[in-house]
Length: 88
Image (tube, rainbow, N blue to C red; front, top):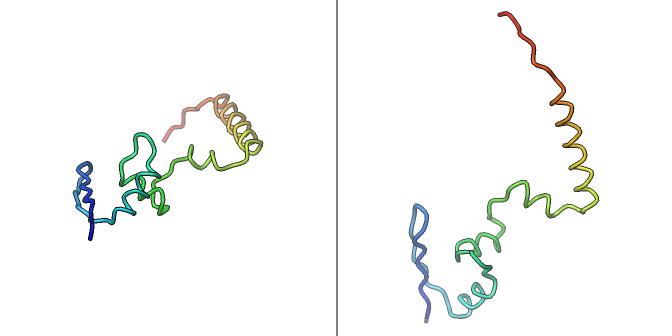
């Protein structure tokens, strides 16, 4: 028998799911501050949306510094380029 019913009210679609108490406890133990249960499920199943910052956190710190230096150098190059007028 299912003991807990969780209804997700945020977002465009609301679904109610029935889960066993052990599943609810497992989700609660994995829930981070500010996360919804949907966020927990997506994170655990590898379906969460990730941004560049999340990706960079997975890279070795020395490599991150190399990437940062390369980005700064490229930005410096772009900042020095002056646009020119072109007649069409």
